[in-house]
Length: 265
Image 1 (cartoon, rainbow, N blue to C red):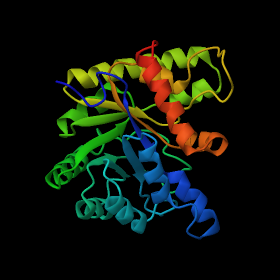
Image 2: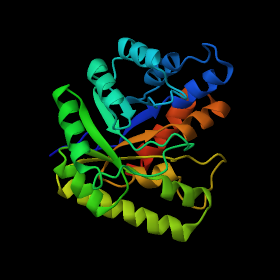
Image 3: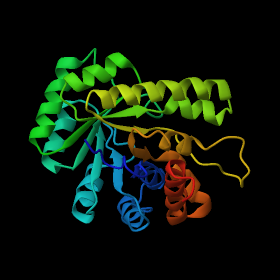
């Protein structure tokens, strides 16, 4: 079976949530996350990712409608497994959906979805969204039980939470990096063995200073894993864009992923 992005570099999903965060800080219309998404596509983004949270802290319902109308690349709609969100997704019918855990108090998604503990609910959601024509992914930790439950629930894809690895990378904790990268490798291989497309994301970044670097960027290290079909990156990419511009930021992240698979590139 050939998985998206697997034969060369992973596909890049650019998460535009924090463009909306910046807009909402002033309560106006600028910067527009839809305009950012259109620019991201022009710059090479393969997928546009967004998380419509229950509290609408960044992306809003009207943003979702405008994204659907404006873009011709796949939309990856991240959402909690709630009746409200499932109904909205059935109306919008995005190409991709990623079901995630969500707590109102969290600053960002802190861990993976508990598919084992919510199995019946997640399985029902997978069936509903597949019937709406959406490719469903479950955002989970690199845990064997969660990966196996995801396959049983009928999800064709999983996205492994790379936050612990990214945190170790930011701290330059090489022992922690090695341990977390091995967990990701094991999880990716298990997912592929079960016939799942395996994606990855959360907290991945590129170096913010010129080479030489003591070790690869977190984006490069994860992109190098051959089972990774898609990378979904938001906060660090938008943060990088503050300094270099959105076009260059996307080029930098895509180049990291390409070089990770083929150092000659």
